Amino acid sequence: MNMPRALANLNGVTMPLEEVKVSALDRGFLFGDAVYEVLRVYRGRPWLLDEHWQRLAHSLEAIRIRGVDLNRLKERMFATITAGHFQEALVYLHITRGVAPRKHAFPPDATPTEFLFVQDFVDGYAQMRQHGGQVVTQPDQRWKRCDIKSTNLLANVLATQAAAEADCVEALLYQPDGTLTEATHSSFFWVREGVLLATPNNPGILPGITRGFLVPLAQKVGVRFEDGTLRRADLAKVSELFLTGTGAEVLPVVRVDGRPVGDGRVGPVTRKLQEAYMAAVRAWLGEG
Ligand SMILES: Cc1ncc(COP(=O)(O)O)c(C=O)c1O
Image: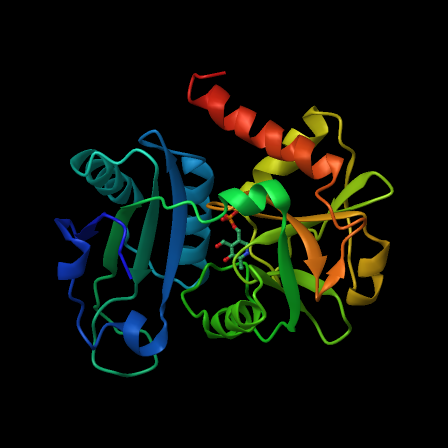
């Protein structure tokens, strides 16, 4: 598979992504003792930077990785974007507790590993944003602190694979009582009787940055928003459903588990929010 053009920075050293080497004793590799972030770069500028930085700080603090200079990390990210002349890109940031002999408890003196790369954004969603995509539902087998953007993604990987095998773009995850939590790498919203709804932030879901931006934007463009809970059994009562994410932006879903959402076409609230979202990006870029 063709890799998008990418440039990395490992602990302050810029290098091609393919040349990055990390010790087998790195705790990110051995224990998944690490957190990460992903940002979208539009025309060379990282979008919703402060929000992503706050979430990264929350994740680091929640697992008690201390001593990371987040301003220095930001400078390294900007330097990498500039060095690679990136325009439409994604930034991946990954911080581990560092390299130490393999013992579960925190090592007394490890230095965190600070890894980032920037790569050209290859938009695999363009068609689906227009016509809508399909999702499956899958049991949510993750841990109880999904508010931490941890690199422990095995349950997400398995559910995403189930989606891929069903020719679907994503999997909506559900708890044993049927409550849908979020998708494997996206947040989701639904529309019922003209009202936009989403699961309130809680430790069982990641506080999506795109979701956080969209809620006040929806209200600004006249869409009523409420916190809600959606069970699998109530999917038939929903008229629209869409995913949000850093790369996906606002992605309509027209089928869940093979059954149409509403009339099976992209609905008016979804369209309105797609347009409002891209208009907000353009305004921020000064292209309004
Ligand atoms: C589990 C999960 N939920 C939601 C999201 C969407 O978050 P964001 O809008 O910050 O990209 C992601 C993004 O990767 C995710 O992994």
